[in-house]
Length: 266
Image 1 (cartoon, rainbow, N blue to C red):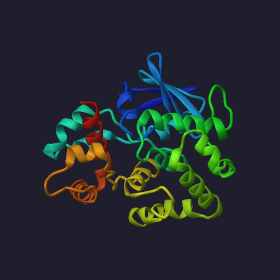
Image 2 (cartoon, rainbow, N blue to C red):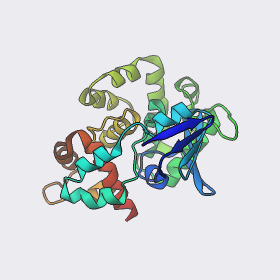
Image 3 (cartoon, one colour):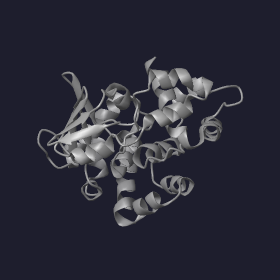
Image 4 (tube, helix red, strand yellow):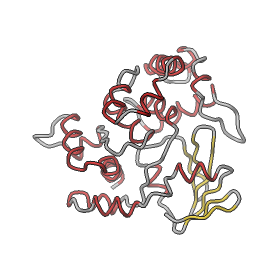
């Protein structure tokens, strides 16, 4: 997507579908405001509306919204699969966000066996509890700040059974170099390392890889994906994942987003 930057504005050559980008299950820290969206990442914020992104950190959000990637190339390749054409057309405005890695890990641990309004509420309270106060919002906590928060405090903000997972995973992250090892590994090895973190199962690991490290060779499978993709032969999440990873290859991740958004929003 072509764009220009002028002071605190990113001007886009066409109007993105911010609803599709934000409602396709990859992010939880955003709010509908007037005719646009407030979007938060790590300690940063932007307002996205129409063909303009307003922010004091334009370079960060050019990368965050993946504006330098030509998604016409991706959609043209995926439309070669007949079963994807309708979903790609419906969700053609989707772009995979380049999110903060640590925030993605914690957010998707919170997402396990949860619904989106509740996930968003827990994350917002977590930011208020342990994040730095910014201009009208709270930053997502750094690993060091979150490591000082007790399990009880996490339980008090409504994390539920996930309190111990957030606490233990943060302790591991702050006391080891596991984030660096995950980021520098190939996708298969990175997934194995993620699965050693408390609260990270197969689906959450794939979400973290896709949304936190932009590994397109991932295919997260949740209940929405099972409703759409399950067959007599593909009757488990693992079978669905393996089949579509093999079928869509290097663009399995974007394919998953188009399918998920179509299943939820149509």
